[in-house]
Length: 321
Image (cartoon, rainbow, N blue to C red):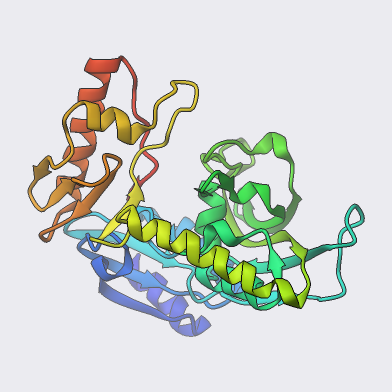
């Protein structure tokens, strides 16, 4: 099956590599090798790759910047599809939305780094994305997870999305206007999108609604971005390889997950090369060539301790491939 895929990729001139190390592809710096690693450069190439891998019995996984995933140890005997090559930004300075003459729409393909999106908005004097300054990963990943930073969710600025969907073996690209009912805290309609007609939805682009400002407001936007990046630095986001917050917060429970883990006395707990960060209970960090199994054991240890002490089940937001 791998030979079938590589032959197709060669004919289609879609970049790929075999036995590709995965650890450098994620912010956790964890993982073995992928039997096949494919980097489509356009939505059309992504659709072709997805159609091919879905026709085999091999596993596959679609990733963006690898900022919220734990790649497996050993060899992944399937295909990892990276969207990082699909990274165009589209902007019409004259385009607004009917409800707001000061609005502006910025469309990003799925592989656009969040840093590039925020930088683009800053340069164009568009406000609304500053809270996402310093967020690793891609637009596609942030939309999929409905990333939340400093009390602002991606869905708060989302205008529409496009995704690839398969009906039986036929693919189609669908545009969805933003519907608040489909979104919630770190929830999106792309997570666990299963049904009789569509097994999954693969994001190809997202359009965001920002607010235009005057040129003299530029420095304030820059200052806000720097403020949020500094807060990330102060919280230890960049001290060690990690995926940021490991567990979602449950606002109904009333206490952040990191505080619950801290009150269980787990900060600093180490298994193998992975550790629950001494400076933040909701971070697991890679301090010495951690394995995916090390991280998984720490996740289970935190869940068990919080369950026994508080009767509350921690829900991971990181994804184990």
